Image (spheres, rainbow, N blue to C red):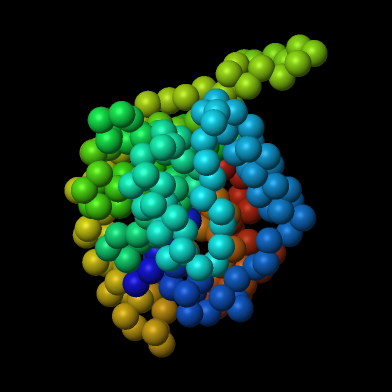
Length: 242
């Protein structure tokens, strides 16, 4: 089982979505222009956030992930860079790329996850927690874990002030609390993925739209269950419990 942090958070939302992504990707809805715009915005925000941590070195992206892992290991061994962008690590079947890794003089590290939202959402904690899990599993001393997001109270003047554009939120305590849940989740998902023929038997529900609208929603709702465009689900303010 090889999981990226994006696949990990996908499975947090719905393990069936992870299975489909792995074994039946043709049923997933391709990203539209709106989704691509969100993706592009995220990239732009990520580049700006690097200015909060200047003079770092970036691990160049390549589909040869082992090469990225090797490059990161070399940079850490050389000890000449205290800021690494896209530091890449692999442990226990999980591959993570840390947006910003701050290496202290004593060898401890802090990790920063950059988001283009204006708050810390619960799913972000799972995102950061799996990065923490990998780094800790590799024997690294993780000093802190942070989410960097847009500060909506900032009003821009003539010049963009990056240090005021972003809020840096310490989520170390929350992420540490999530650590004990990760091994059992991985075992559960590995059991699902070990069966390459049969989809997990997971019903539709509020998780199909939260925290993101799943790209398997059309398949699960329309193809498999033939739910019409206008149905009981269109009732205003109809909660999942009701």
